[in-house]
Amino acid sequence: MKRLTVHTTKLLTWTNRLTHIVISLALVSATILLAALFFNDIYLAIKSHSLIKGFLHALGILLLLWTMVELINTELDHLQGGTIDVAIFIEVALVVVVREIIMLPVSEIHPSWIELSMWAGAATLLGLTYYLVRSGQYLLRKTAVLQNINKSPPNK
Image 1 (cartoon, rainbow, N blue to C red):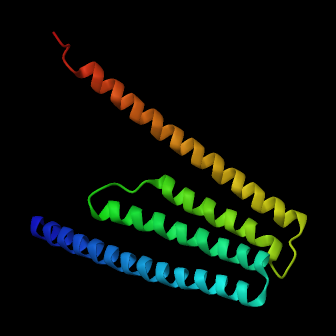
Image 2 (cartoon, rainbow, N blue to C red; image 1 turned 180 degrees about the vertical axis):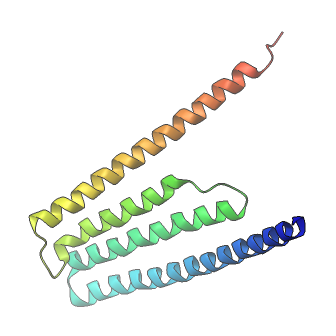
């Protein structure tokens, strides 16, 4: 039974590493494609003399590119032995929602008040969730520091 556990652990470790390599390659590919799309949107905006609409499209792509950078940083930290911070995924979701809100004025279909309210509500709830998670993490770090101070021997 112990041999089966050892082999299963090796298989899962190998699969985990391979999956992270695939994720890393996908993140790099997506970043390159988004960067190309960003510069293409700027070029098209200048060419068509539609700077406002083109700027908003480019800004939306730039927000997605920023999201990719955050995900790459998270993956890099994980590959170097760090932990994955759940707040990063909340941040990514918030950026995506904000991007959608920014893109609403230049979309082909004009959203209803209900749709606008849903996007605003999603942004508010994600922002609140992000604040609560970061506040909880801050309190945990502060508590850990205080516990370490209390455990250290007094200086003479």
